[in-house]
Structure formats: C-alpha cells, structure tokens
Image (cartoon, rainbow, N blue to C red; front, side):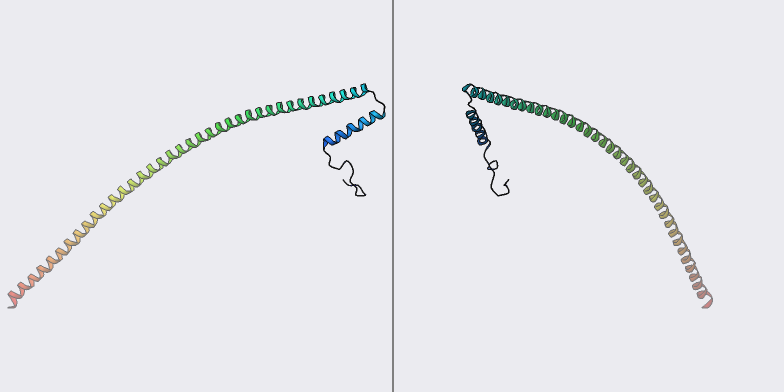
Length: 174
C-alpha cells in the first residue's frame, strides 16, 4: 500500500519470495562482517540454516503424507458409506417395487372380480330384458290376434247382416 506521501514502500515493490530471501541473507552476511564473525561462525550459521531447511522440508513432507493419509481414509469412508447407501437404496427400491407389484396384482384381481360381477349382472339383466321382450311380444301377438278375431267377427256379423238384408229384400220386397 502506498504511504501518505504517495511513495511506494520497499516491501510493496512486488519482489518475489526468492529475492526477499536473498536480501535477508545479504543482510545477515553484512551483519556477520560487521560483527567480525569468524569462518566457524559462518559455517555454523550455514549449518543451522541448512538444518532448519531440512526440518522445514521434513515437516512439509510429513504434512503431505498426513494429508494424503487422511484423504485416502476419507475416500475409503466415503466409498464405504456410498456403497452402504447404494445397497440400502437398492433394498428399499426392491421392497417398493415388490409392494407396488403386490398392490397392482391386488388391484387387477379386484378389477377382474368387479368386471366379472358386472358382466354377470349385465348378462342377467339382458336375459331378463329378453324374457320381458318375449313376454311383451307374446302379449302383443295375443292382443293382435284378439283384435283380428274381433274384426273377423265384426266382418262376419256385417256380412251376415248384409246377406240377411239381401235375402229379405229379395224375398219380401220383390
């Protein structure tokens, strides 16, 4: 961030971490030279820095192994849990399918029974209607026969009257 006088600071110059390390080492070397350090001091400092780097790399490697172990463990737990859920889901789905098939079979049986009952009722009603129709047809035939017989008797009576009149006219009038 810029300062109040709009001059960028040295820390904000965007240097890479490698450049920052080099600058820190140069500062350490300058301090060592100014403090009249011996070659043994520099070697000890170098060994100490090397050991700290080794410890840091070892910690990073241990952390990486720990993360990989935890990741593998979580993956295995997830796969186990997923397999269990998949199995439970399959069992529930099979149970639901079986219940559905049972319900459909029961419904089909009920429908077939209802259709058979309805068919029997329809056939019984149709037979009764056929009987009623034949009875009504028989009654109508008898009524027509009676009406025809009534007309025949009337015609016979009229013909007899007409013949009686012709006979009377022929015998008594002429």
